[in-house]
Amino acid sequence: MSRGPARATTPAPFSRPRPGEQPPYLYEPYASTIKRAPRRPPVPIPHTLSEVTGPDLNAAWTGAHTNDLTRSAGKGEAQGQRIIVAGRLLDEDGRPIPHSLVEVWQCNAAGRYLHDGDVHDAPLDPNFTGYGRLITNDQGEYRLLTIKPGSYPWRNTHNAWRPAHIHFSLFGNAFAMRLITQMYFPGDPLLATDPVYNSVPDEAARRRLISDYDAGLSEAEYALGYRFDIVLRGRAATPMER
Image (spheres, rainbow, N blue to C red):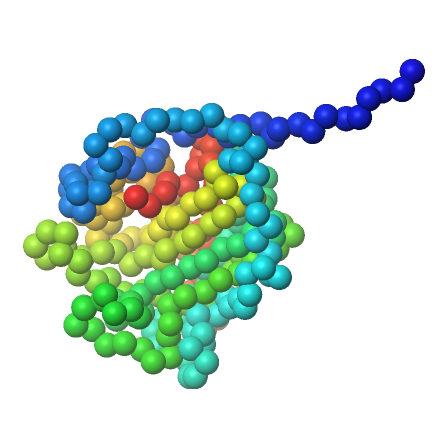
């Protein structure tokens, strides 16, 4: 007896994060959240096919890519300490996410972004745009060459300075995997007082935002290496940026 046509199956829903492993919408030491946080608790919705699937954000769709931010302006080399940042993009079960779009942006070595809204009295670097994009390889790995960003004042409180950080935008392979986060550097004394970093209640979850120095990734007499793995969704997820 012949069987009927196979039914399409809906992928399993994602696990919810553990309490305290993601930053709240309202964290009073982070002053801007007071005005933009929702007044009522968000309402969880069930995961449907729309949330657990996503677009194919491959190179053919996303245009030009660059993983070398030191020369992305198309002129000379950017000023500052060269660093190599590399890692893996993983799903909630620790499996690599291949062929996925990764975008990064950051300030220059003097602590200034290349946009009109940045009024910090620090020099711009004509050879540095601070923006890059790339696609993970077959093993879900990414690698970029850039300049270590500087710290900058941000007026959250008197004499408040942001620790050095790089912004990451990740898409994964489903809409519900979308993540915007920040990567920090080990040993930065400004982490202890930074409300963006400390808005994540769980200490172990906060630690996932700090890259690891990797001597094996460094290139002799050229660049220091930092490793930063990113987990999208689940119980070991990299905390998001609110």
